[in-house]
Length: 556
Image 1 (tube, helix red, strand yellow):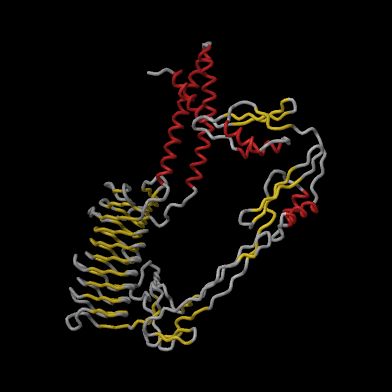
Image 2: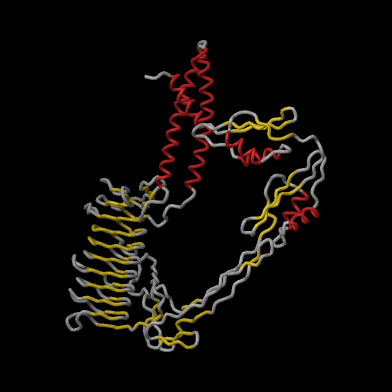
């Protein structure tokens, strides 16, 4: 087993490899000499810009920037003459002015006077600014402040150009609620009346439903040199008209009584609305381009297909519903394992039992989802009444919210939500490296403590004293490395936001038998005990599923 000396040697070798390069500028008989020391194999090289800044700060004369670049690149660890030190002749303050490549910003760096030289006056500075062609967007307050209270060697923005203001495209102003989202209003008990959620809007012939707004011209920009910058031309917007509308000049009116619709393709139309008492053998299957409203029941095995929305006032059994708009089931859905409902919008139901639902938008259920397969690209909300999700499979792109998840009898209930946050692999790698260095530092400190304690009891050998010195150096250097890597980790952690929509909220209780998944390898399986109280499941920064709970007393 290797002794403490070999262990110390490994630590020192690692520190030597991590050592950054450094440089020195010294006065050797009136000559300025530069010495560049190479970094370790893992260390950072000396930056030429840092060397040049110090050369200028020291007032070195006669230096050659290309020579300095070469010395920095070779890093031969020997002093090389680069110029001469100032002999004390007075040098007045001056300004370096640079203009950005796009000519939209000018910056200035003031240099101090030396050996009794004069300070730069405001008049002289403004003359210099004008001499480089800067005439637009000059920031007077910066110039005045730097003349009164100069802050040397710090870049300050002294002029900014004016970017062009793009033209504003024309638009179509819609005079009806175009998102087709329902007005979900809860009573004092948190219940939602799914019979009155106002998905269907209506218009009369001659009603104004849309208007075309003309485009607005943009504004030219200017660079700090006064060059004109053209703006992005505005565009007029074209109408996309569907059936049952009438255009008069730039205003659009309804031609019939019906439901105004703005489709995903931005087509504006007025749907016809068909109202049926029931769907059975007297009507057959229904395929209608507009909105379908059924007052009573739909017979088992019958189908409704529409480019609009479907409103069912009663319960639905083994029926097949497909709509490009929303589907509202005021009385619920009892699919008995065979019924299927599909919407390119949202689905609203009082309850779902042994049914299959698929929504391109979201799914809203009041009472319960039992032994069903439901999926939504956005979110699923089972709230307002009992709010129970029991058995089956629930899949949502962003979130699930319910009152109870699972059942007392441990019914198998699967839930799949969201995706892992970005940059998770990189964060894990950084955390692993920090943890390894923390372990090494702890071992260094432990060995150092033992030797110090030993020195208090008896005289150490010369070799042990040298080891203490080496360990102290190692402790200092490893501490600095850890501080640096921890700061980099915090920077990486703050450079992105985890997906805020990937979560599961359960208001009252989560039962055994529930399996949660937040993507590949990120699973949460309930144990033998329920989680009583409000529980929030989400992805932590380390990629694991986390919970936040508000515990309440379980009802008897």
